[in-house]
Image (cartoon, rainbow, N blue to C red; front, top):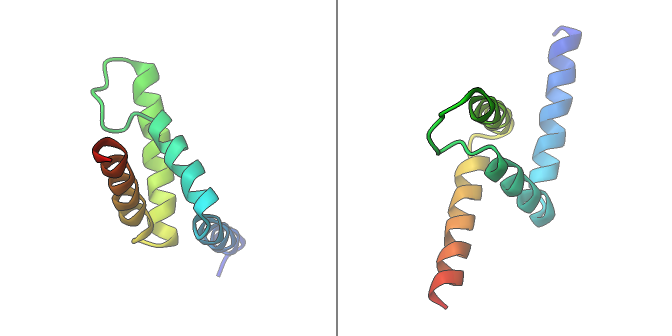
Length: 85
């Protein structure tokens, strides 16, 4: 195992720990919302934001492929509860 892959494994472990807390999940959801990944990409600035979001999603998937789907599901439930009392 090279030094780079050891460093990446440490990073992935840190991501898993960060995402195991509600605070970490809340922060990550906010960060991803700033990336506008699901909107149209009319300009370079928006494309850059989207690329950052895709890089973050790759990191999340490498750490644990279930992190983002769980995050999406939980925030969809919260939005539903907020909008429907």
